Image (cartoon, rainbow, N blue to C red; front, side, top):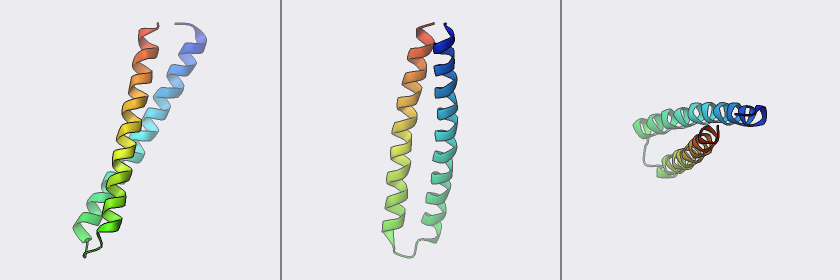
Length: 72
């Protein structure tokens, strides 16, 4: 793997770590909201949508990483 691809791979791996961390935080917020929800479903729904968005982004980044690793 050339140096440019190594740098790209490292960048995408760091991005993945950050996304996973943010996703976990959103899931924790969602779980807390679900426990304390007093009928206001809009906040819970928003957090669920955010969690789904992050999961899609995580999957996309994993695909990029896999492609870079295959191109070694």
